[in-house]
Image (cartoon, rainbow, N blue to C red; front, side, top):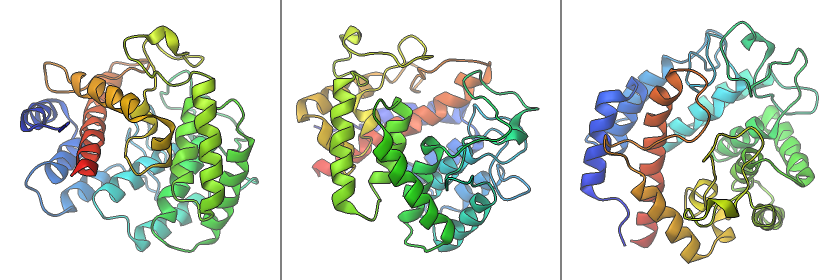
Length: 305
């Protein structure tokens, strides 16, 4: 069956043209519209660049202020990757910035002490001496490995991620997402497949995935989550080519995608399920969630073609 219909895209476009930031509007125009060159997306993304070469200014709606933060880097890299613009030059520039903010363990923290003066959600603490975190380092490393570049930072980060993945025993869902982002590109494919299989078993055993949207009582909410903030199979496997796809049966994935498609709201956008800590959370988060939904549904459509 086809998950993405023309009407769905038209309604999403209406929502994004009405409520999206320039960045999400430019992404939509390139990914689902008639824009054929990525320069508009890159120009919009450049507006979030911090003076030191990182990304800030609310690129991640939960991270405000003008200081570049590591947690914003995977968002920028993912946008460049989805439009085919994550080349060696961009990747090397990212490594240069990341090397300045790497901790002794070889990873990068989610946020730096420079975030302290600016608004942030209560679940994002700022430490004077932060440690490297898989949540940030995993997606960044996976995306940069996909470019084929070589850089000392990337080599050290790969070792950090490998250790961090192996240490996961009761992973938070965001740690699992980050681990998969790394495992999908990890150089040691045999090791990556073993670790992915182990994590998939943990996700099911610990009930950190909602396999049936009609029975939320069968899943566990992670500590600090908002009511209804569940992770479904398509959240762990947003593309059919990810290692996490093997965690779920065809029936489970179809049910998850059906739920995702049916979640488009009257205004054309998709909802967010995480905690709303300030008025802009939904206003800036929903356009991002809308594009993510369309991209996931289209990825599974293309796999059937």
